[in-house]
Structure formats: structure tokens, C-alpha cells
Amino acid sequence: MSEQKSSRIGGFYKLSREERLDAVKDVSGLAQEDLDRLLSTESLPFELADRLVENAVSSFGVPLGIATNMLVDGRDVLVPMATEESSVIAAASNAARQCRDSGGFHTSLSATEMIAQIQVLGLSDPWAGRAKILERKSEIAQICNGCDPMLVKLGGGFRDLQVRVLPSSRGSMVVTHIIVDTKDAMGANAVNTMAERLAPTLASWTGGRHHLRILSNLADRRLARARAVWPKDAIGGTEIVDAMLDAAEFAEVDPYRAATHNKGIMNGISSVALATGNDTRAIEAGAHAYAATSGAYRPLSHYEKTAEGDLAGSIELPLALGLVGGATKVHPMAQVCLKILGVQNVVEFSGIVAAVGLAQNFAALKALATVGIQKGHMTLHAQNVAIAAGATGEEIAQVAAELARRGEVRGDVAETVLAEIRAKT
Image 1 (cartoon, rainbow, N blue to C red):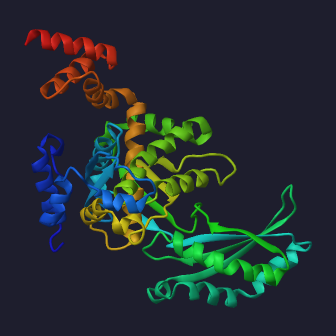
Image 2: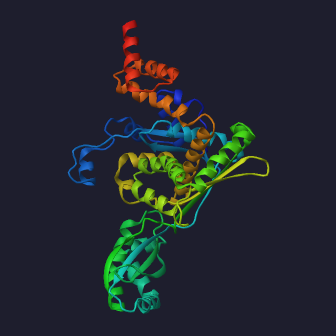
Image 3: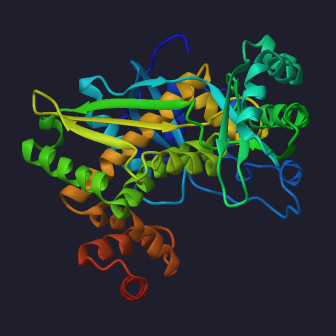
């Protein structure tokens, strides 16, 4: 885009669908064909669905919304999020608004490297086998890079080697990690191909037998980080800051709380991953594994009080995201969502996704520490309950409003309210 447009779109939720799309087009510079795709009732043609999965019969629609107000590394960005859960997108947008004046989110990515593992079994001298593998690092690099000359041409390829001896109930195993820079690709196919090509060679060098050879979803060579400061005056004062710190500390000391804490983070991250055609299962597996690397399951985010008394939040987690390959390249809606994001490389992309995770987490913590999670969530969920009860058109808003007023967001109450409304008309 030639001109920076603000992601701060006041009252976005009040706009009609067409007005929202016009605003997104204005900020993101979408073409008419992109708008047509967003307006289409069939986001994924069956011919493509039939090629993406086996035994296809249709495609499954998930609501796609836009998180506004995001300022990431000094750049305004609109973030597409695909989710069925009420309040997720609104919460992320609200959290982003409250830290805009302090500079928004600042991010970094440790590298764009992925790990593939090769398991060798049956060695009577596993430590000697480890040494033999490490001695031939340059040969391993040649084998790996020979599998993907295009990746090497783009500046990626083999970077490093790690070899571990792991004791087990079935004897010691030698596990080799090849570390590969996959650049803007998630890289599963590239590193899996390298591991499969290399495995027989490792077995012949060591005298063992190769077994599993596949990438690891604990992508700790690809750590995304984001941080932000929420001014105390923007979030309700010192009491709110302290209440949120107490809530965050709960997750630090209790894995039962940490699991839900991290689930809230993934509400945001998985929504962006799904919207852009990325592998949500790989990302969630890596995040939760990373949360336990200290030996105890802990939160992925951390909160502190600044010298000025404001709330500083930060997050770090592995993000195996890609801009090329897989569904990101062939799914037409994923392509539109990437255009809306306007990212140039996976470093920018990862920073935005990490920032969304932090925003989502902040919003959940604030709600929990103040009014409780149900107030905002159930207000939006009431619409779903109203629809399930049979409400249509304007009835949906009327039933939802009455459910929220009564504080009883239940199906049986919705049916009663709907009958009362219809009796009056």
C-alpha cells in the first residue's frame, strides 16, 4: 500500500456488511475480485475441496471477522480471524485499542528454522554413533540441500545439526535433529523430505537401523515474541492493574489455570492461522509443548508493572506459520485474508499473530479480574441461543437483549421470550 491507513475504525461492529467491506477495502487495498470472494456464499469451490481432502462431500463454513485497532511494529493492520466463538474478535480489537496510545505491539521472531527428527535404533554403542553423525555435518548439509535446491536459492536450507542419545525402556536411541531454514514456508514437506532422504545414510554410518523420520511441531527455533504496555488510566486505574497481575500469577503457579489461560491465547492465534490456511493443529501442539518445557506447564504470557504503574505484557511461543505452500497458496479465501494482512514475509506475519495472542490474553484476564468472563461473552452468545430457539430477523436482537437483561442465557428461557414477543405482534 502506498499510503498508511489506520486500523482504528470506530464503530466497526455497527456498520452493515457492505460498509465493513468498504472499510476493509479502503485500508487493505483489496481488488474487486477479492471483495467478490468475501461476498460469495461459496468460499471454497467443491472441485478444490475434493482435491484438498479425501472423501469430500462439501465444505464447512466458519465465521470470518476482522480485528481492528491493531498497531504492530508501528504499522496499522487489520487482522482476519476465523472462529465460531463469540466475543473473541471484539476482545482482541478492544485490547488493541487500549494500548494504541502507548505504541501498540512490538514483536520479533528468533528465526525461520524448523526441526526434523531421525530416530536410529539397535546400536550397542549409541554414544559412538552420535559422534559418527556429528563428524559428518558437511555431508549431511549436502544431502539436505540437495533435496530442495529452490529453497537454497531463496536463501534457506540446512543450518545446523544436533544429535541426542535418549535412554528408554526399549534401549537407547540416537535422535538426530536437522535444523533447516524454511524462510516464508512452514516447511513440513521440505524437512520431511530431507529427513527421509538422510535416514538410510545415518543408519549405514552408525550400524543401526533408522525408524521414524519426521518434523517436530515443537518449533522452538522459530519463537515469536510480542510485547505491549497498557497505561493504567486506559484500563481503569491501579486497582485493575493489580487485579490483573494477581490473575496472571494464578496461571504462573497452577497448571489447571495455566491451561485455560493459554487456551485464551490460542483463541486468537488459531483464528488467524485458520483464516490464512495455516496448520492450527501444529501450532497448538507446539504452543502447549513449549509451555511445559520448564518441567511444569506454565503460561505463554507474562505480566509486570512498569515503573510508572502501567501494565506490561509479553508473550513468547513457537509459531510454525507459512505464507507459501499448503492451503495458504491454494485456498482462495486464505489468499484474500493474507492480502488484508498485507504482510511481506513470515517475520511480519508471525509478529502480528503473536500480538493477537497477547491481545486476546489481555482481554480475557481483564474480564476475569473485573466483571467476570460471562458478562461480555454471554451477551454475544445470547444471539446464538436466540437463533437456536427459532428467532429470525429482528427477533434475534430482541430475544438476545431480553436474555442479557434477565441474566439467563438459556435455550428454555429464549423459547419463552420468543413466544412472548410473537404473542405481542
